Length: 112
Image (tube, rainbow, N blue to C red; front, side):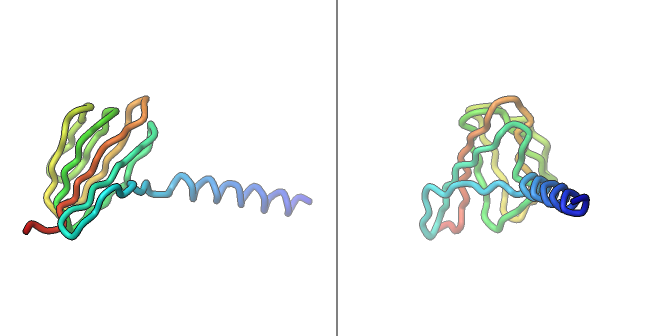
């Protein structure tokens, strides 16, 4: 019984760690050969984790107040503001506020 309880406790801890470590995946709302548009929603206290893409990125904050951290800057953004990042720049978007965050991400895949 003691071993079964220990295994159950370990399984619950591993599940909680796995859920907490998951990355947030934005929802794709439009894509063609030149551009992809995504909606990113983050609960308070969550973030995207450090990531980078080949595409240049334009982010537009619809609701909330995210923090953008990259080698180029550390910015506290507000609703109605935007940011621009060239491709291949590692960055993290975090919702350090107390209300949900919603923003639109426009990724420029190629310029024709």
